[in-house]
Image (cartoon, rainbow, N blue to C red; front, side, top):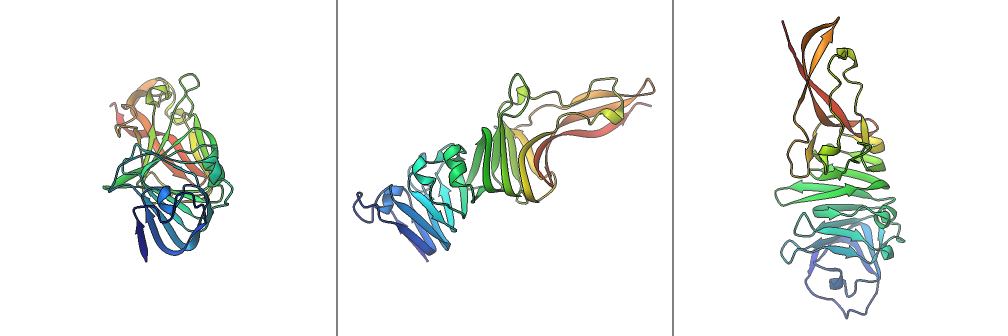
Amino acid sequence: MAVNLSGPVINSANTAEVTVNAGTLEVENLTNLASAAGIVNLGLQGTLAIDKSNGTAADLNFTRSLTGQGQLLVNLGDSDKAFSFDSSSVSGGFSGQLTMNDGRFILDANAAQTMANATLRLKGDLHGLGSTTLVGNQTMGGLIINGGKIEVDYDATTHLPTGHLTVNRFDATGGGALAITTPSHMPSAGASSGVSFFDHDDNVEDQIVSATDVAGVGSQLALTGVDGTPVASDQVISVIQNGVQTGNAHYNYMAAVKEDGLYIWPRINPVGCIC
């Protein structure tokens, strides 16, 4: 069962608990729930869908206390609009799943506390893109990338990522993207010319997400700039063996999902032999 509410259901001063035990309650704004204050309780089979795709795209700050094991679906009508949790949301012990269908999830201290036992799902398809930007060291219960995007910055001085996320569960089987907001701050992808080929992989290995349980080990996540373009052109390095140049190695970066999380990893393309 789905219920769509386009206007306040009661007067806006009412802060009564809203409970969805089963089915879907769809609203455009929290004020459609009578008030932006109070409690939202989502049962295991219950879903609250915030959908602005047919109205006016806008940021949304979730001000109700969120509790339960159900689903919160968010579509802000524009991938650049922001969804955030207010300090009033953090005390509910939510352990369900938040799916960003379209919009940017603000992962700050309020969000980390609200999502401590919950899972964030970043979805992406022809209808929208869910994303989040990692700033500082944050934690959540779980992260699912299902076509969505994670963004992270690199520091201009240290050439290290400025964000890191720790989760219990990380699922990257659905693919998506890891986007670098400042690719010019990344260190060189390749080793120096003249270094032994067997030492050419001793380079960048930056962990972006650390996890205890991982699904989707592989290289299915694209590594791009925020505009979807490659982070850098291939760097060509000469391969030296016994003092003789034997070929050229083409270096770049890749996003690698490993057994303990998500990394930015050096990628070596096939070596061209100089005969």
